[in-house]
Image 1 (cartoon, rainbow, N blue to C red):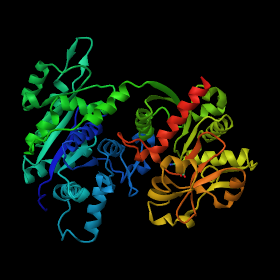
Image 2: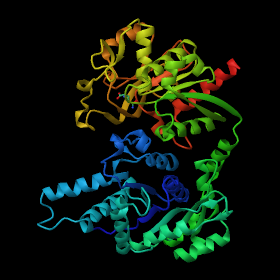
Image 3: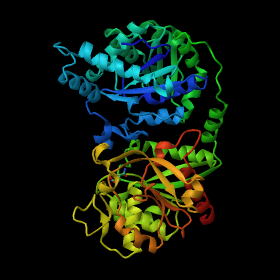
Image 4: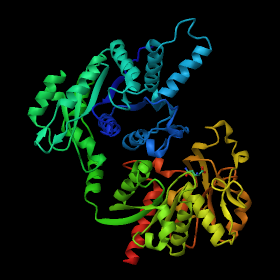
Length: 542
Ligand code: GLN
């Protein structure tokens, strides 16, 4: 295996429980290094056996984050992109399914020369190869953050921790460190902070031969010196490397808390990187605006996974970014689309100043979504459709304006009489890409003078897709003649990518997912403009 020239590696593991925010911690540490002028990339290693999360239910996994090159990845990649303002690719997320897939493929090709193929060294070598691969990102990076999904002690995670152990042995401790994120719970009944779970999770790591260099202790309140001393002593970590990771009001505050604890400086010292001053003024101003907005606006999101907010992670974050740029707090009102079917759109939408219909799959709740779009359209409430949201808007328009009463999408009705949304595989030649899905970045041309054109400020854009169905071209004429503007088309003119309604103040939808490209310090133009329209609506209607 090649020795990395200069790249340093930071392995981030988690102990005690899941959901401690390893993704946010990794992104935050990455930001602190980047703001010191270092080039940073990230790898998320997911120990599950699925090849990618594309086939996992949102209930199991939350959002599937789509990269420019069309990989369906873990939602942590969204945090990395938003914090670090970089675009990642399929090589920034690896899974056990991919690792084993590759090893088995090589075995079938006879590449192991009669050897018995084993977890050590063959699987661990493949993991190490994938870690090294990321060092070449952006023409070579200074630091790779490698986040291991799951919790120390999981059976699935073992080969990865073993690979980390080998990696550190091969490349030296001043080139690779382990940052372990753990939980230090506060037990109300006894009024005590407990360090034992942390001790146990570090023991688990050490059993496999990995000694953490830094512990980030997730706590509700401050971490006392006494607790730091105790954790340091029992976990064999210098006390000043026991870092407090206290709950904060926003994930964007985390880098600032880590900076106050001197995390990046300690990491750099361990990695023999010269200390460089940090530049965080823009980030601080951004966090201040999240904390102290001057206005509030309510926006409804009608979806079918509304109990599971992780399914809409990137959308929620996009609204934070767009809120900051409008000096407003965007309060999201979650609308169960099936409830719209029962109670009617009016009762569900009377409270909000904007409606967003996000992406989605399958039948449940679709009639409620279509009804919600209709209500927003008829009452000139700002409406923003994303992917399935665009499809619902087209169905509403076809049914209720063009008079095509049987209009529907083939996704829901195989034998649909009027397939305004249909499978258009022949036009896109998508069969080679991710099965039958159109995935990843595609260019789109905007009609001059359209709202979309005005918002983006340019005629040619590129956005990320993840869908199977498209607007059926046979219905384009009647939709256009009835007043719907097809404001964005694929460069060959064959695919409808954006629609809008010129008569309304803000009725616009995209077949793509703009939420994947919103960044902390630069909100996506569509979200920014939609929030502005909702504020205007609120002003007029209050
Ligand atoms: N289910 C729709 C399709 O496959 C929309 C997908 C989405 O919203 N991401 O086309």
